Amino acid sequence: MAANGWQRVKVIDSHTGGEPTRLVVSGGPDLGRGELADRLNEFRQHHDSFRSAVVNEPRGSDVVVGALLCEPVDATCAAGIIFFNNVGYLGMCGHGTIGLVATLAYMNRITPGEHRIETPVGVVSAVLHENGKVTVNNVASYRSAANVAVKVPGYGEVRGDVAWGGNWFFLVRKHDLSLTLKNVDELTTFTWAIRTALRESGISGDHRKEIDHVELFAPSQIPGVDSKNFVLCPGKAYDRSPCGTGTSAKLACLYADGKIKEGQVWKQESIVGSVFEGTVRVKDNKIYPSITGSAFVNAEAELILNPQDPLCMGIRV
Ligand code: PYC
Figure (spheres, rainbow, N blue to C red):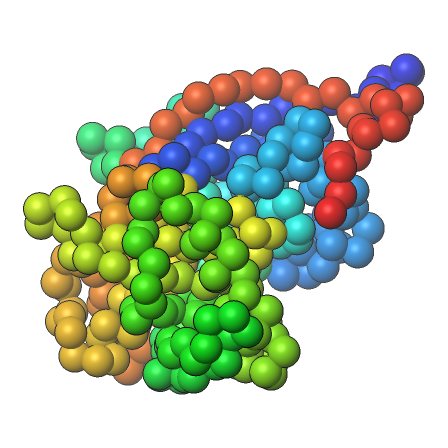
């Protein structure tokens, strides 16, 4: 920290299919050298204001996903990473991992090939392709409950699958809304009502973990693309990308229903029209999704945390 008390934080911004990732490259909190899950606890308990300073207004916005670059415990990993957003932390983030890999390439820290990355929910690997695309080989994903009914005030009964793709999702196929950008307010209100109803009905992921992402599906109008989605993120922003962990959860459900086979490519369009390609690999009866997309670096900056600024640590929800 400088004599004037200012903390300088170097960040590199990218977007993956429209969804931003702000990577903190230096100037972040020292979380020690423990496992990433322990470092995430340290971050949450003792440095949460730093999270807010990086992603919340006035420096950021509800849609920005932050990522703290960490030294990995395992030296075979290219990086450790902790993802966070306007309200808290993410176990894993697919679009963010694609953004991380594109940013590490921009920093000349990696070259095309496969790289291991430590996250709080386990090690994932990612392939940087020669054409700049990135494939994330995600953690094992699965459906924990199929066709679950929840009564949503103002909407009636809504049915969906509960699935894990690195975060917990409620995936809804049958609904009356049109998945278009014009409808984002209505889609947000509906999915937020579903999330609230799930919590109030005691419907959760495993170990009573809150289902904090809700996903709606509809057919895509793009030839050759299988599906379009709208994904509500934990802090009420919607994912501009097709959501890497959400597409992983979808793939796990499709595989469980016999609708895709191992290796078959599923193309998932986002609400803004960007597309991820997903496949699954099955090992020891577990489903491992791989998600391919592109990210582009669009800013390099130094954040200034001036303690004299009353909103230095961001506007907190
Ligand atoms: O791509 O996994 C994802 C993600 C989660 C929240 C926002 N994006």
